[in-house]
Length: 262
Picture 1 (spheres, rainbow, N blue to C red):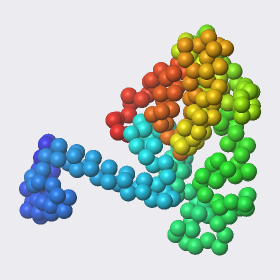
Picture 2: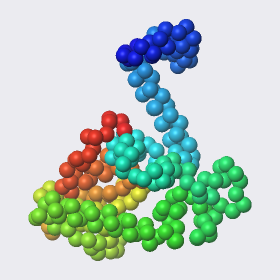
Picture 3: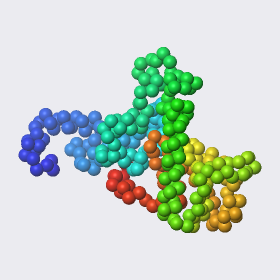
Picture 4: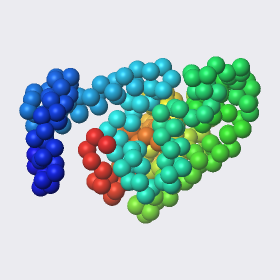
């Protein structure tokens, strides 16, 4: 109705088009005629319902909640120049847990063997391939190290007075602990350790909590805190962003490029 194209107006004046639109609106429990605001509200409700159904799935719903409202983790969906088409498809498969591993394929066509064809001791799932398989272990460690090297380099770049120690051995009542990084800046001293599961956040805080008081005294820091840097399937959880802020990171300049709720 707001279009300047006369052909569109002619189409809307058709009785069959009006009947079709009214039928669709009634099916969606929308008033007729409806407004743009009615459609936006309907779309938001449908998205929430779909997210709820998706996250409730046993296999494909894992970690879905951590991606909701994640502007940075979902950036490749809004900027088609970030990935080549083939990598974009692969990213979607990884995001939705529909990659061609034996467990995923078994949902559609029963497989004779569900064990990993590289390390037969476990089922071939996406989680196994990304974080547990001995065949991909070297790549996983390399990626893990690249992320923490980036954190260390950027922290020192943003704060020239920052002190960063990589993989120190810290004595404790439970033996030696070896976090990825220990960093001291103007805000305090931080024990940085990475993981890919959100449930590990509490475990990391408990694990390194026994060291914090002593580290704060030894380094004469105003505070001490354990910062688990975690994410899964490309997610950038809000807690991770908060942790990075404490290490001296500023808001990502590209974040405003993406719409709210991305």
